[in-house]
Amino acid sequence: MKIQEMQDEIRRLKKEQDVCILVHAYQSHDLWEIADYIGDSFGLAEQAVNAPQKNIIMCGVRFMAETVKLLSPDKNVILPKSGAGCPMAEQFSVADIERLKEENPGYSVVAYINTTASLKTVCDVCVTSASAVKIVRAMDADKIIFIPDCNLGDWVSKQVPEKEIKVLQGGCPRHAAVTVEDVKRAKNEHPDALLLVHPECKPEVVGRADYIGSTTGIMSYAKESEAKEFIIGTENSIVQHLQFEQPDKQFYELSRDLICNDMRLTTLGDVYKCLTDNTGERISLPDDVMEKAKICIDEMLRLG
Image (cartoon, rainbow, N blue to C red; front, side, top):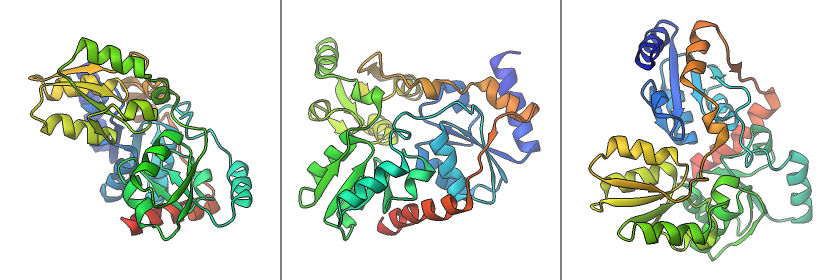
């Protein structure tokens, strides 16, 4: 079966089976082409809430599928590849954060959306990379522990210096692996290109960027900018997606190592099998996790 033939069959089957397909921006372009919605993790979860379909296939990683389930508890949420996880989301346990709270009385815990549902149960508010500064600034608390990404937390602390923000030594291993040497090399090779980076990168990399923002923020900036060349400091799939969408512009990877292996696990064939053979993992969370984890998401929505 050719790619287009499989895509056409997926499109037919998803209508027949009342399925909405969510595709994270880091997924491959053949998956983009069969998506009902494409975007960042929380944006996709919000789309699922309003989608008329009762069944959701989440092409991404586990914490994203869990967030979809938290916001749409009455829908069937399917993760095509059970092994697709996120090292950052799984770095800390509930016991780790409970101990941290005991050691730091009076601090509120801010959880990046890239955390497991169970970890969200012991946090006060969630944030996305796009909303983190706004949410932290709007919080009543002046003392904050930011988990799990230390680089995003550092970036937020610099934007909100009036608050005391503690960060843990955690984060995305792929973004954190990018170095200043990578920046120098890329700028030397492409001196006219603007550098667009995700705040999960190290502070010394972020400090050299022309634009800092979420994945969708980076893509929007590149599309709207009058500049013609860009170095992309996030998962390398975004380079290809932008090349398709903006063929009159040039896009370059900041580092060849900016590849998320977990995101690459899900294939077009996996989605096809979900629809033909009922494969994939049905996401199910305990009632207490559903209830408690939703609290910090609701607080994020309340704050902005």
